[in-house]
Amino acid sequence: MNICCCWVSSMKFPYLGWRFSRPFISLSSSSRVMSIQNSSSSLASISTESKEKESSPWLIVGLGNPGKKFAATRHNVGFEMVDTIAEAEGISMSTVSFKALFGKGFIGDVPVILAKPQTYMNSSGESVGAIVSYYKIPPKQVLVIFDDLDLPFAKLRLLPKGGHGGHNGMKSVINHLKGNVGFPRLRIGIGRPPGKMDPVAFVLRTFTKQEREELNFTLQDGLEAVRILLLEGFDKSATFVNSAKKIKQMGSIIVVNSSRAIAAERYATESA
Image (cartoon, rainbow, N blue to C red):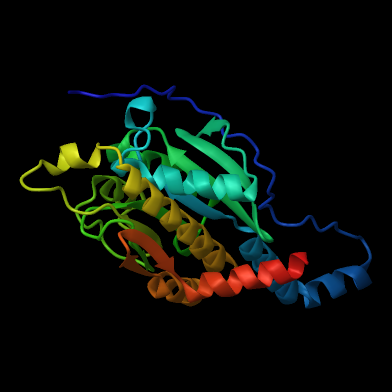
């Protein structure tokens, strides 16, 4: 089946509320003022670069396929993770731009752009590359979230960089970032297909009731991991992800996460 999606070739990119321009410095005819400006030019340049760096938003991209037909399938867990973040942080995803469902907001005091490419999985990079190029977002501030057949179901893995691992969506992203693989990625395990089932058919399957319950826990872990990544750094976020242990008890899945328990206790104390 040949699935295609048409887009208007001439796209206008709307202003999203962040300014990346250098500050305006007025000129004066006074030699004294000019002397002061010249002597402090190096400091002004450093200060400006620092402010621009601080103002650069994070881009958080979830990979998946558009349309109701693919909603809630294994291949779309990247979309679900972005939806979870958007709902928790109050970020609207109603804008369509850069060939993606698009939202802007903040996590803590960090500006973020959330995106769900609508190009179909194998062309996801068209959207990601356009956003990164337009806003000049550094690769280390581009987080791509996607499904992984090679991870056990509902397991998370956060990596600072790497290849595509055979994932077509990631292949496209890397290609449109000109081969750059130095961006973080959050992989969500969907498990291996049973028996001799075709992997293509498997990734387009929906979840069982028990799998859905377990996945919902994982999405909450992913939300906390993203918050920690943006506010406290990669190392602490990776530690959080790797500390998540899942055990079976009386036929149910119980998620044990000491970091989450500490966070919950802290929030409860602050709310009291």
